[in-house]
Image (cartoon, rainbow, N blue to C red; front, side, top):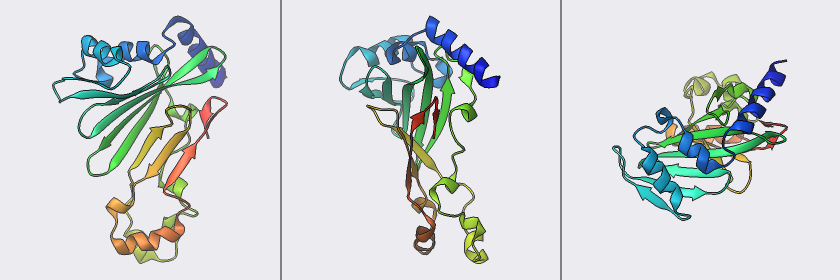
Length: 204
């Protein structure tokens, strides 16, 4: 029942509002990109190449754009990505990724209807944590001295494939560990990157 209601809301939203990333960016609520005026949004979109405009927090630059994808450099350490994803015939969902790279990169992923109503991440995204990069949890290993020394939270950054819907997650563990800890951890890792595929209106 919950999925049916969600699908109905998405179809109704897509039928009324913008179907391309430019219009969605123009209608984005100010709280999602503070300090950027409507005029600046238009300036960022008017050129097919890279475009930069001033803002109170520094220069903002468009670094990539297509019909369903937009990437904006919001500061020296921040980026914003918008991606339109299909959920059913003629209906779309907006995925927004905000990334900060202050020494190490960490991303926040959220989903919206095309009229910018926030949606529950659980409907579209699996649980994203350090565990998905491991063959087995380092917290379950017998070497208690080693496992206790590991941080509880690892930064994970997310990036879209500009020409597709794949979502690449990068595991930033080296910046938080000593060289000895890195060598202990490596045998437990499947990879330091995971690619999620958009299928049946969710990432898997």
